[in-house]
Length: 307
Ligand SMILES: [Zn+2]
Image 1: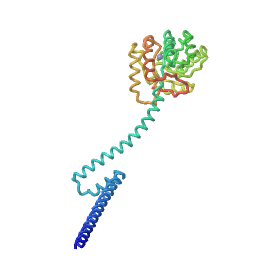
Image 2: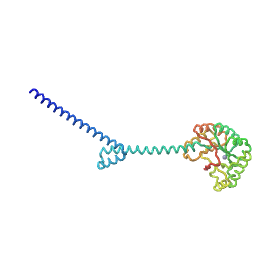
Image 3: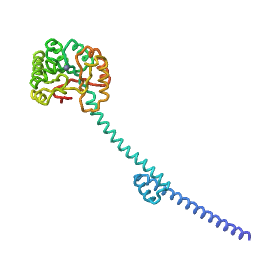
Image 4: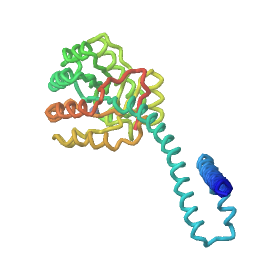
């Protein structure tokens, strides 16, 4: 009897244990499938993230097309706009940066070259100009009046030795005389050219006409000087040192440099062999050096600028 009872109890216990195991198995199974389900869902989300934003947005907007006022859509549109703007701004930023870099390279090559020119010499101020130019490792171009050449022949020879450039500025510096005819212009320049050659051995074709080419140089005059092979230079920056007769010409040059809008246009500065110009020339050279300018000379190979 006792044995029978024990056997039944054992069977009962066995069944109970089996049920427990079965329940445990089912619970485990359910839990596993739940986790897997979540994993799949999150994978889908991730996949969506990897797809182009615009594609997702388009699909979602398509789905919500009738639901114009839905706040959900508003949020999504907002996100899309933000994403798009980020995307397009990053693309355009790169383009702008590349463009900027190219621009800067061009600007640096042109922007850091300046051509200083001095008219109406040589005279008693020319040597002081040469001293200062030498100190700042600057080169310049001197447009000279023929009558001054003989008198300051030593200054001319010094200029040549120190690597500066020389051009002719005529003989009379009188508008009524030099601009009488194309022959008059050519003759004054030729006379200067011959005197310069006799002093220095230099055969220059660089010229600047008195008061600049505007308004006196007629088309026929231009044709005449071109025919003779002269290279007529005006300027792009007028220092107005002839008018200010003070330090003001320096700041006037610097202001023009700051607002210089065309990087392709050479910076040709008009100055004169004058006492007040010499007096403040060092501050100009100092400033230009600080700004990283290279002061170079005009050559016959350069394309001249005219007003
Ligand atoms: Zn002049």
